[in-house]
Image 1: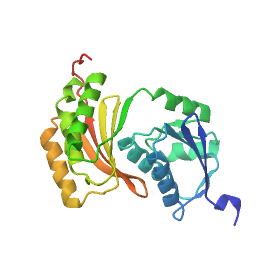
Image 2 (image 1 turned 180 degrees about the horizontal axis):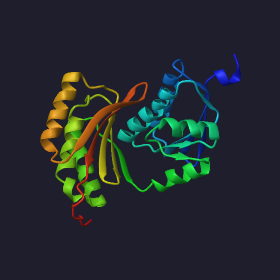
Image 3 (image 1 turned 90 degrees about the horizontal axis):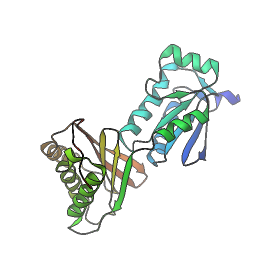
Image 4 (image 1 turned 120 degrees about the vertical axis):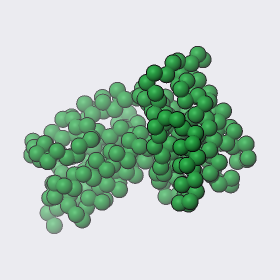
Length: 247
């Protein structure tokens, strides 16, 4: 088997950003590996993921959509920025001709991609473990309210704490649980890290309850971040006309 027929995925770290080099053959037998490994890397919540593709051999161009799938999933949760690096004229021409991937920003050098990741590090984040008792939802509400006040998100001051409390209510009392809050651009993300996946009926109940609380647009879902850890997340849109809240 020629070297270009093998898929090779290697990683290295630069200033908290994970640089992933994908080389070799992208075809129907390898694209799922590319997709799954990139999803796993993004789910570990580095500051960003930069994907180098100069040595990629694309046997089936439509499979470049795998990078869009990863970008879209990471954008929902955990919000990890993904950047692409392509300097190889042949690979760049193929991407231009096919219009794929549609979403992942593309740069000619790794340094430029790293700079773009650094430019996105302007959001705020809170990560707090929650107690293993019945007061857990109340603690989650208090943490979320304090974060909203500190970040000046007045329009969600009544909504976000209720959403956080509702999400925590659906976790196992015996499970280790932590609350993750993020504000980036016009979005507030509420994540609950836990080991228990919700049953379908419970997921539907939670969605219904959040819909009755949230008067803004929202998205929610579950993302596996390791073999035994899940993140239940809700992303709330911050209205553009909201006034500031004094600290």
